[in-house]
Image 1: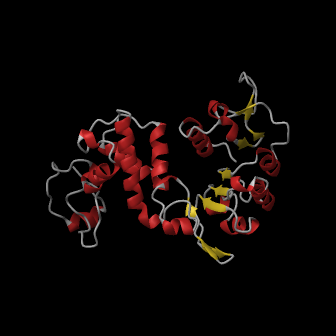
Image 2: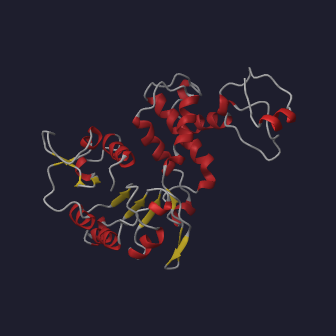
Image 3: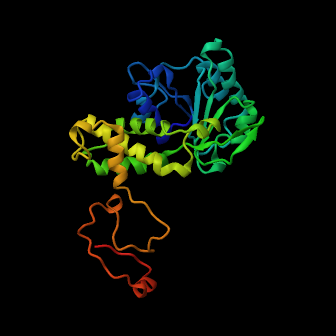
Length: 305
């Protein structure tokens, strides 16, 4: 729900890299489900990006009503990235999402996924509390701005912050270290899988969707590793971090990346004269310089050669 860059990018990734059939991905804008004619000459798309992910054929129902859309499309997942319609995932929408699963044969049922990704929290399509209460605890919830953990029906829920801060540090680090010539969309799918594979038992038990933020360095090490391996597979890496025979070995690539990650420590000086290569590239050429408190106090700046 919402046809801005966030949902368009996610839809494009699902279609082109996740191999999800076009018939299973629906995007809505203010005019309802985005559709186009078979020849692409008409429809409700507003730009080429919307046209690329549009459904083929005009819906036969009122697709401006979200409850009706859920009843007709029967989605397992609803993702909100509207940005200006807080609360648009109403009780009726959530109940309709639950009914979709109830109507399936028992062996095909799953719990509905509800992602309210609009920021800040005041713009969220639904709050965590409302999602759990409207669904009677059946829905799994994630949001763009983190909501506090809460207990519902005796079960602790700790909804995760489902946005790109788990991706970009590791993406950039991995691409930089292997000197990737480009960053194709495939890298982002590999990175997303890496995030999912770092979920631990607590994350799963509390239905956080993503790992706890306290483990962000561990998560981004896994993301960077996935990126380097993808670059090796696609022949896009300009530099090998391990022996060529080990280029696709997750553990060995990860160990090489972790060895050059800068780790802050409590006992480190306020302004170390040498920086880690993880932050600024090779630092052997940076000369040691005497720390000057006087200059720092006067200028409040930090410079590097």
